[in-house]
Length: 238
Picture 1: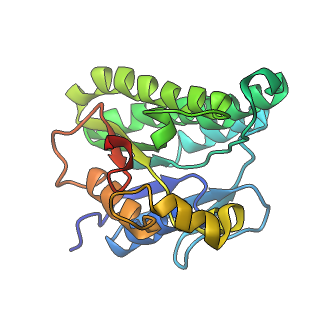
Picture 2: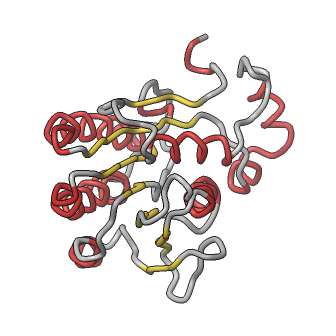
């Protein structure tokens, strides 16, 4: 029997990049996995189920949280997120609100929805994918950093309440990860310049994030809770 056999995992934003890698790893570890995406009729990794929801839509998010409450989720991975880089004085309030809705409000509503079922089982794991920009920041990240610092605080408060019921809640904070989007945004020259600043001298791989998320979400993690754990090749420590 694999470590997550009999567990149901819900991975938001699980159709590509880090989310797809997390879903695939949880499947490989024996979990039943449901992923979300924004497109009707979309799909996640082979073997996963798919649910469509746009977390930028407040009403749709509330309705989805109500649906999630009845699924019997054992493992919640809040991975879906959006970003828009803008100078602080030029941040559109509508963009700011949308980023908070997707990156903060949706994880809050989903965690609130699944905790009662986890508490009834005396076991649960909640992992929220944050970012190094939720531990440090830089110019242009005002809206995004606000959201990622927020989920750190949200997770710490949640963990303080639910650990006594066997529910462990943590964040992981990836650094620069080798995804299709990263390569599109940075290009090869940008990646070379960036990796020169990373002590490991390379981008991280989605599978490396997935492996740690799967460990945090599994039975071997029995005492880590309320943490925001950085996976960045040493970038934030130099």
